[in-house]
Image (cartoon, rainbow, N blue to C red):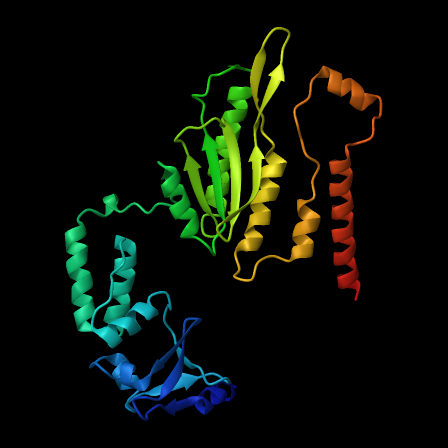
Length: 316
């Protein structure tokens, strides 16, 4: 029975050998790589033994040569074989991982470089890996440079300016301001690999405002402040529109690709009712059942038309 199970393995074991310019396909622990036999046999190491006919290699049904190792650092291994040098990782843990691979493939030069760098790093307790980085904007020019440099990556900016004391703040404003900051921190941790989050603290007339960018252009904005009228004065009110902020963050993920989002989908999801501050007189008019303004009616109509087109295309 054991012989029957092992029999198929013999069919995919063979010798790889050929012209140095011949390309081979490598599957290293699920990580796929293309390279030439010349690169693999350039230095005296285990890969040279595998691809110069001295050792048998295993291939799958699609012709991928299987190597039972982690593929995380195999790209660095190949670059070292090609160029004789490679930028080493910044953290102690990743250097140790690369060192283990260099030892396995018997690449002595890379092994010595890793050992030397580990000696220079000192105590491993100083090896701190940040989960995400959030740039603080110090000038409008810096902001524009960050957004322009991330054309293929959505950008979410939170502007915070509690120093604007033109009017007194309402009772819940400080709590809502903190809630906006806490939500920004949560979103930056959750989507740090897909979205660039930046924080604007240089000061402006705005107090709390979210801005969303896609392909280098502003696509949405959520202002969280409003002026409310008391008996004898004006007050500044900071709000926390959590659902709207989540919605705009998810919408900006549609701008990750190079082509851009589906226009019908964007039109259907971006048609919203404008939210504005209103006084008690406005509230009374709303209770009386006055019709919505023409702009709101037009926005609702566009949203319905967009959703109808999406349903029609899906059914077809």
